[in-house]
Image (cartoon, rainbow, N blue to C red; front, side, top):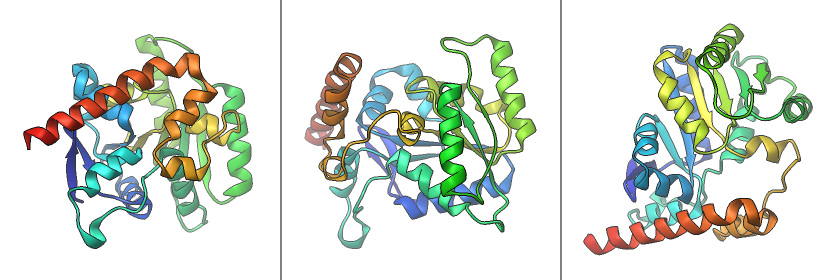
Length: 253
């Protein structure tokens, strides 16, 4: 799988089908934990500017281009049929993977980690209706805030006992990436996805941007309009950093 640097982040030149196939292939091996990140400008800029987060992301096995600016950066270095026609949006990737396991012949199960118990119930109910042959082995709503070592051990044991092959970690960025990376050496064999707001989107608790806005790379503006107080600082800081590092790297080359 070809990877190209986007402000230093090794992003895979990959589409939904390739990312889904990769995840299912790795999940069937059962040899070790694999980590998947759907990266947007926030993730890329944070990895560049924050040492701890950058080290955490370096332990991920597949970094897919979630944000359109990452797709545009990749395509600037690609030609013809190699160019990407769409991003790999984390919430949509989740649906694609569930769809791919929606058959009795595929013995692959899922684990949902994160969110409120009410959110997880909505997710389980929705997916049971849409993907009746996909198996959710278990789910867990962890306590808010920092966790004691005993809580982390409890979560790891729940994942192990569930036998899940695909673990969806919806703790928010950067907590989910740090948790996956810093515990990767002791996590049960499975594919772990840092999935951000996908739980809230699919549970119907947060509205997603219209497709046209997403394809224009303006989803951040839509979400900012929905939650200005919570998201203004994040988007202003990290979108600016992404643009700054992109221009700086381009002029150096």
